[in-house]
Structure formats: structure tokens, C-alpha cells
Image 1 (cartoon, rainbow, N blue to C red):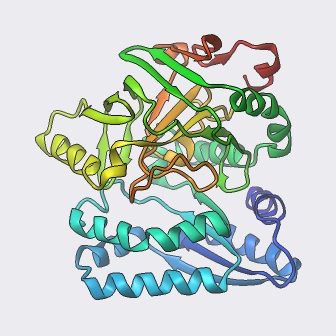
Image 2: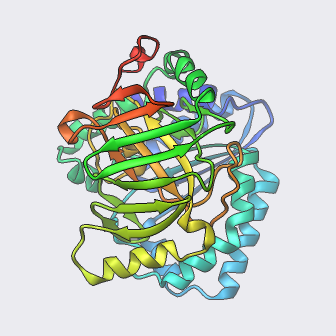
Length: 366
């Protein structure tokens, strides 16, 4: 029943699939029951569907030995996809955060650079939805038994996104009028401008679960420092306590709480990927009321109630602050009182305190 409800939300609301459109579903085999419900919904819409099943562990083994010709083939395959499909559904089934740790960093970098243009088309010019199907590994990270975790995930994914869309409008309007943003909290004092940059509500149209509103900082306006307080799996490492210091938009210092030297080396490597890796492409506020605790899955963690993410790397095309990069690293700071608290100010006016919106017009988001 829950798979059926989610499939209906994805096909009829998120993607709004039309007759004769072509839909590509990419999924891990564990999600086959959801895939079957998606296929039924697509067929009922008189659209066309193709399914690719995959496995992250096997894919990682292949990428560990990837040569340039394989990267070129992968590029050609992505080009074929964007030329022939109107809608994309990606269902990830996480096995292990460290599956990709043995992929050489130069391979990861080459793939990112090679696919950047075609990925931009897929993200910005096609309809798509990304979600993670609940797995035993994820339930362990969330410290829940699987059945409890399954219900938790589907409750978050099947939220009333039409209501969220209505509730979010006052925040969107306020952000569109804002120049300076200030973020304060433990080991955090950050200022930047969002003046004249678009504000994009995320209410179940692309990511599932959803519940955020993003914009981007004026590229060279960021000054100060921020310490994130959620674990962040990225490129085969799980970073803890990442702290970034900015001057005129650029990251001039990056540290983490991981004591292993390999983490410090990897952190520098990430921010040296390209010039844009040291600038920020996204600023977003998270407010999905069904998601309250981090579980090492960015699709959930970036929507945590009372959180923000401030993202080094590439901006989105619909909110273009001029920063281009082959990375986009969503790092999350939870500002609720149980995580140390914190404040957000728009043009010197307190907007959110300890994760709770304080303005009357925004309280529906609490």
C-alpha cells in the first residue's frame, strides 16, 4: 500500500507524466516492489517505461578499474538517455557508505568533469526524481529496526507536498526581498548576500522526501566561518564536524573532526578539485517535520526540520550565482536546541531561532 501511494505521488505529482512520454527508472533490485507500482502508474498514463536495475557494490568494482574509454562510453550512454527520455526516476539502495572508497580520486574527478555538461541537461532540462529506498544498512545508521525505519522513510516520502507548497510561499517571498543573511551558532558566524538571486521551493517535484527552499549566495559575498554538525558521507569517506572559513566567498580554511590523516588529505583534495570547489553554490533551509535526526543520507539530512545546508561547489541552473564546479557537497547544520541551537537573520531581522521560525507568517513551517 505504501509503495502504491508513493508511486502515485511520483508519477502524478512530482513528474506529472504525460501520455507518450518516455520514462527511465534506475533502481536497486531491493526496490522492485516500488518499481512495479511505478510501472503500473506509468502504463496507466499511456506513457513508455524502461527499467535498469543496478547494484552499488558491483558498480564500484567496475569503476575501480575504469579507463578513459569506459568514461567515454559512460558519457555516450548519458547522452543517449537525455536524447531519448523525458523523465528520470533514480532509486538508490545504499549498501555501504564506503563502497566507493577504493575508486581512485583521479577517476572520480575525470568522471565528474566528463559528465558535467550532460548531467546539467538531465538536471536542468528534464523531469527527474531521486529517492533512496530504505535498506538494512540505512536502518542501522538511523538506529532503528528495519520495519520501524521503513515506516519512518515512507511517512517522510509521502508527506502532503501540496500543503507544503502552500505553506512555503511566505518564506519564498521573504527570501526574494532579502539582501544580507547572517547565520550564528556554536563555532559559526557567517554573513553573505542573496540579493537578486532566485528562490526555489522544493516540495516533492525532484527529491523524495522533500522540504527545503534554496537560493545561492552572491559568489564573493561570503565571509566568516561555519561548523557543520551532521556526519557527511562523501566520495567514500564519512566526515565529522567539517568547519569552513570564508573570505570574500572563497574557502580559505577547511578542517574536520576526523583525526585520521587520510581525512585531512581527502578534504583538501575535494576543495582543490577545481576553482569552483572553494566557492558556494547553494544556501537552503530544511523543514520537513517528519525528518528530525541525521542518518547519513543527504536526501533526508538536508530536509531535517530546523536545518540549513551551505553547499560548496556548483550552483543550480535555476539559481545561477556563476559558480561552476564538478562537485556539489551538501553539508548540513542542524540549529535546533537539542543540537546546540543557532539563529538566522535576514537583513538584521531574526527569522529562525533554535530551528523554529519566529515570524507569524512562517510558523506553519514549524
